[in-house]
Image (cartoon, rainbow, N blue to C red; front, side):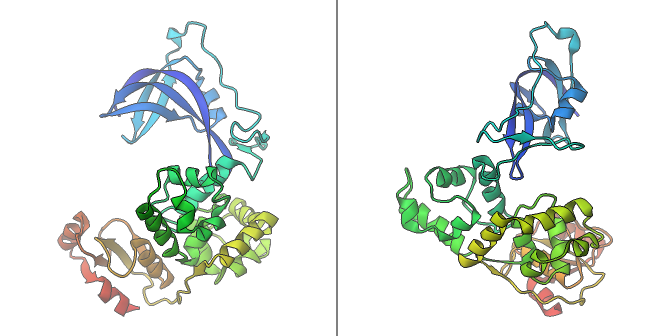
Length: 346
């Protein structure tokens, strides 16, 4: 990968939806691999110590995988003595809450579950493509809603009205209508998307899929004893305890109640094994489903959904304006079917 040098002008921390404080380097802007780089993640305090990085250091950076800027090492011979060590904050820079770093863990976290920044990240996660997929609700709009007292948590999203938005600075009726329509048209989700949307620590998309295939409802998951969760081989003890503790938390119980009171509906998809052992890839735009929903249908019927065509691919589901996967499937002799053909299979 291409490398160059620059200076660490500062080290700051960002806050994620689980309360994790992640340090990042503010760099003297430098061009590398065709783009201007101004910052780089430092992952955690231990990583900073391991690389012996200081504020003011001249460092070698590279683009990891040509995408993410990464600091390789400092040039210690260029130090002047004015460089400063980074110290992880003891209080949250956003809310002033206590920051703790559990023994044996690399990540420091804000303990205040009501922290403004944590709630913001939870909401951004909740409306993301792999969760409720509410178009138009980017970070700036979420911040504006929180700052104006329109939403405090994810359940408030579905209680928003057009007139609430029209009163905001620089908002016009057309934009307000677009956002409200997007919210109202995305109240129905599959169980796995709902589980993922909750932002439970250690529960990514794959774990949410596993949980939805074992538990038939959110109530079944919420009431599952710890030994039942620990027996799920694809999850592991850390995630199992995180899931169990999340559903036992009083605030989270209240959140679930508020979500369902606001009109959330979990789609009931009948599980079967018609597609067991079959590998599917989707390309192009679909008419009746989103790609994510169709992939979940494939999994719930025993099949495997992949993002790339290979010799193991049994079917390519073809939508409009297909990409390079279509040509590759033709060259490999993969059976090509339409969305309608697929729906007839189940």
